[in-house]
Image (cartoon, rainbow, N blue to C red; front, side):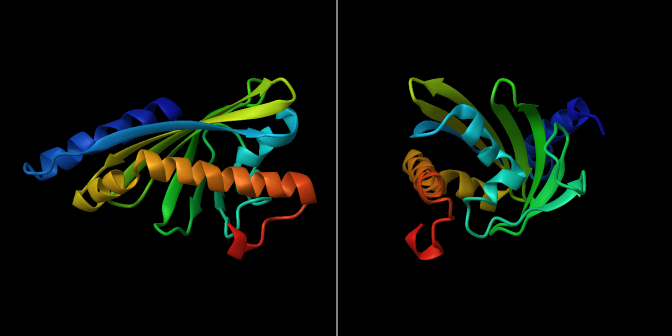
Amino acid sequence: MNLAVLALTLSSLPLLAQQASPRFTAKSATHSGEFKMNAPVDRVFPFFTPAGESDWAEGWNPEFLIPADGTTREGMVFRTPGPPPMNWVATHYDPGKHEIGYVTFTNDSLIRQLAITCRTEGSVTVAAVTYTLTGLSEEGNHQVEEYTEQAHEHRLHEWDTAIDHLLRTGKRLPHHQQ
């Protein structure tokens, strides 16, 4: 399936959910934020690929489906156990521009779009991270409501802390400190 067909299919899921249950109204929210890393952009951008996240994210263990070797590329597909278990599709990958984007979705409750862009500012790299969440069910709407701006800021702070620890020590931050 090409990416345009996949994007059209995923974008129509909230409409399909509304048609299946006339009382259901999908909720959606977008949250953006940034954090800085004390390393060159070419050093840190790979941390946002599925394989690279394993270097710093405790418990990150993607199951690569396409390609099976986990090579990052547009159209790659993988799963993570969660919670909640998520299916992932890399919808955009431009390492020259330090950009990567994903659509993730649960089997029945939530679609999440994720866009990450890294840029150099002086001697640091700034990662801009945007999440857009759309509920596909009442449970999905609840997840949209729970993922507030403060929750997004907390997530980015955790990423910043874990990546900073890796850059300073060469090791993943122990789980109890994340």
